[in-house]
Image (tube, rainbow, N blue to C red; front, side):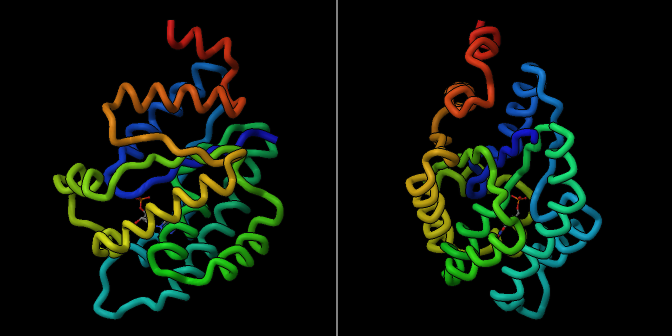
Length: 216
Ligand code: TMP
């Protein structure tokens, strides 16, 4: 089986540029990478993403939001993630179930036992080998994201929502230190990238040898 790596964080922490950086690092050290995202990654998943993130006059119920996230995930696992892992490819995914714990569990305050039941149902034993959470205070993320396009339906939430999302991410990293790590994303890009490099080698994704080659 290939390695399954996921990247997480609140809005404005630099997920997009760091995803590109991680992909380049992995490819430079010989990984055959599949880069994908959630919600999305398949035709059905991207259609569900449209429904989940677009603004509508009619409010979506919180349970419907949770179930649609997992519906998209079931399709993504079946069509993209599992086939790639079975071929020995490295899957690099922009958000996964930790986002559900953070946004639906932390942000929306849905019962985490329900999330965990869905996780077991949809994923069986599969968990990411490594999850990198880019962490920064909500105000820092907001300030960086404010120059971007119109926020999506979930990004429209208030700061208190994102404080809970961030707290839930920090909690996950504390509970599962063997597979989830925090990277301080409030510092400059080079320092963030240095932390990512170190974490990838600590979690045995990159060989220490390739680390010194890359840093040289
Ligand atoms: P993104 O473009 O940053 O990936 O945005 C996707 C949005 O979907 C973001 O606001 C977080 C949200 N989301 C959830 O609420 N729960 C989930 O399980 C996932 C994967 C994403």
